[in-house]
Image (cartoon, rainbow over the protein chains, first blue to last red):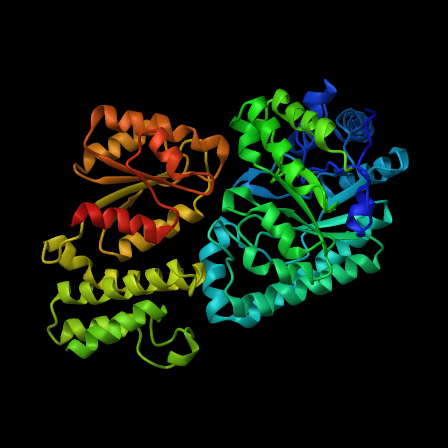
Length: 325
Length: 221
């Protein structure tokens, strides 16, 4: 049977598609699959200025080649600078101007069906480690300052999204972790004040830019699925299995109002065997594809530690079971 | 005097640190854990009774956390209020007038630099009457073994946030158990499960700070 790539634009706009689209929140294996250097983060900033433009052009070519090979329906460009833990820069980032340049190049040379996604935070999230104590204290003792911070994140998020949309990005994902394994980090009053109104305003602004708004959050957000589905976002990414989220039940709860993206356990991709990855992806596709609102991918970044064979097992499951009858 | 202890428990449960703190709003301007502890000590209340009142407050907030009635920031404020009391009680711990429930050595395992969950567990466990030795992040098996050697009879907590680093827990458990087989070791962190804990030979898994306290208190009882 011939492969049919999933039409992610249809899924994000609530229309039917003949196959489940494949998209990763962050894919770090470009180099491994392309078989040549694809420098991001420190590897990129270590390059002399004179070599950077060529490196970006070569990276764009490698990304498109690998996306085609793996049947991706969408590609997330590298994020801006951030640290995974204090002093540890993330792997998949580029300086702002280079990021825009890469997006521009990808937009100009990509096949029309491939959607470009950028991660830009527009909604306040749980604080990182250095700010954790301070933020928690301020959240309770000085909520007005948190409100101001939420507004700032929103305004900056929309401004950055606008720049990316101008160069060809078509979907903007706000990586805003609002929950941990137990449930929401914020209490209901804080969710109603700092998170949900900003999420609604951010989603509307991204739509006004002509792009699809997607929310990414780790953790268990079962109690907020309805609010997220009503917020105006096109999709929710992660549906974190580590936090005990059942994507089938989540699909029933959101009832087709938004697409759900994920939720193959990213840990399984790192430490599982190809057959267990295949089984997990197959099971997910068979149980959740029929509604046509599933986007297949890992629950979080596909890290460089992921064995190639494990990722190929995921795409093989998609090839065999990704078609929607 | 009993009233003062009750009031202290309420301050801990509510995260009321001192008179100047604006949280919780309904207790604005009232004395907090700091002032009440000072007054209690001045009025001759035994430090052990003060500690008992605090632990009751921590237990109540922990239970509410378990029922999703309070969230991480509120739990953290309770732990901060508790730490304020602990600062007043420190001299009594040093003289042995007040006894801790035991010693808990905690650290984020080798290769992992995340410390939010570990810090939170440390604060809540300390607030429940344990002496906590926080080894920090990226802690090697050798460092854990050395710490256990320095605190005979301690319990150990291993934290990991990443699927790529939780695998290092097994080596640490083995290193500790090889040298100090009686040591109880508990594990936790986003990707960790009770099955994984069993698989690597740990003595227990705690999904959250209160879970860690419950496991530790079973040892102390």
